[in-house]
Amino acid sequence: NMELERTERQVIESLSKSDQMLDHIPFETCGQCTHLSIFAEAARDLLDGKVGCSGESELKAWSAEVKRRWEETKFYKLWQAEKEAGRDPHIEFDKRGWEP
Image (cartoon, rainbow, N blue to C red; front, top):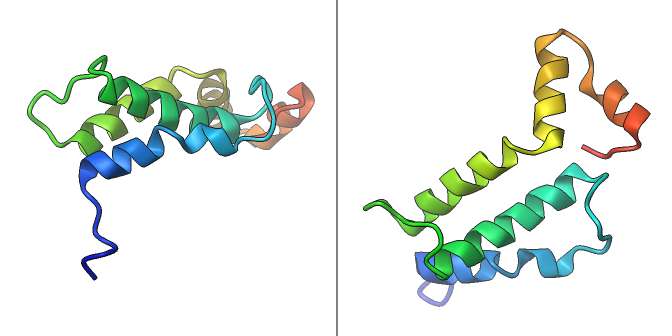
């Protein structure tokens, strides 16, 4: 359906607003809200030219930037460390009062 087709730019513009629906700030205890915030920030930075595409599509550039930023978060690092140690990450998240 032609009405449903959107350009990559339109998708990025929509993603840049994805943090507007978040209902609790700050995000220090919520991995999901942090992830959505990263979606929006990376999209805005791409639209503002702060993140380059290097010849790839805007969506691929956005996706790579989201992945890079997410992997720098305390949520990702703790989850990975617990999984690598053979433990259930939910236990450490619960101890900290975090939501994955």
